[in-house]
Length: 557
Ligand code: NAD
Image 1 (cartoon, helix red, strand yellow):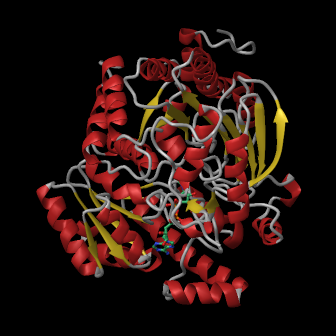
Image 2 (image 1 turned 90 degrees about the vertical axis):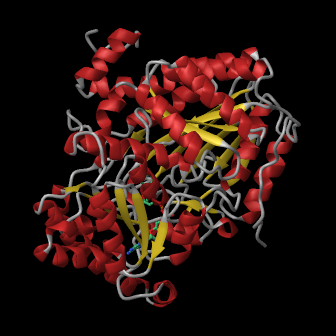
């Protein structure tokens, strides 16, 4: 039986015994809100098959347990199933979550799927199984920042008059068209599933839909010539469109994209990438009838796709991998190691931010009232008056972002700034300027919380890409600091076997205890990122540690 119309309760009344449990309950439900989740009937939130609970029965048991959980108890969740409640203490996390972990020798998709079929595990992605997904906005700011950094590096700071070619308009990828137009650019986003394009157009993330490549390219060329921001969602398969654009750009350089990337769910061969020549229905039949053949067809398409990306790179487009392990798939299964000539977006654009402890700070208003987010937006502008780039984002987000589920906001903040804003939010709740508590969390794609050699830790200066002690330390420290809930996941973003990462969420409930917990967590959490990057030899991180007083015994401060 499905729970297809799950919605989080809103307002200032409690259905649990404390705000930390209540927040976990509301954010779990919010992850599965039909406005938020990609396939709520299957409990799938985003990112291929990233789920919030193992099955419907487990979901209901989690809800029941959170409602009875005392303020000195902790619920343990094993890959989406509530497995135990233990007495801890009142400033301990109320929930600890472990998702998709496998012993490294067994950490393959094949083994994972076998165990999943037995009902023993689930794929938690990053914020799906850790209950802090906030819809497409979550990735919007990261994508906006990434495109801005790309513009800075390649196009004198603006994408105006630039053609961005990408694919995938799913939960995360759906942010790309708006992030491109917010940077002034013209985006052609290729998506095989018409309903996904429609959803993005309806929610204001994409300007228009097209079914024809010629028409789409005409629209793009017109907007590029006029330097007018425009996004077009083209219903088609990227494995056909990209080679098509390569062919056309041989005779006509005006169709050569300036920026090329991809956000199909390439990390998951079986579920995430539709092979060329198949409708969605045909693809799902083949997947069911002949999964091995299906994988081969997918890989054939991926190879064509990556060949086309490499060719566009050769012709001068700024091509980058956007964290979906497309390169890893063709390298591992087709020996196409040249795919790694395409740079990853983290070393290319994001690492300098990580060195300052910067990352995707997000919050949601448990009141359900959009005015609470407006008040917090105003607080960001008041507290950081000199950060123009941040102010530009907050203002644009206020204008352009349609909330999905509970009203929420995201912005990238550095070490020090996160704790400062958390303390301020707690004050706003205490003074009654917000109608209910606010949850503060982040993506697992953050400075100290992830080991993922094809993505966040690609090309670390000291070669420590695959060292996974760091996210474990991050999760243990956030637990010791008393986050409201803490999670440790495997396989998010890039798939089983490729990453280990941790999440945390902490509630600003307006109390003294809430304030202390926030201060500890929001200092320690980005502090682990400064530590990790300083340890890897990044000067910027060493400088941040020195200036901000992060105590790193092995680093000469
Ligand atoms: P999703 O599964 O919700 O969406 C993927 C979309 O790709 C679907 O709409 C699907 O129809 C489309 N698609 C699949 N094959 C296609 C093809 N051949 N041509 C055109 N469209 C095709 O996933 P998502 O949440 O949007 O995430 C996308 C990818 O990005 C995942 O691999 C995810 O792990 C990764 N990711 C990256 C970041 C980042 O910061 N860069 C963050 C989170 C996730």
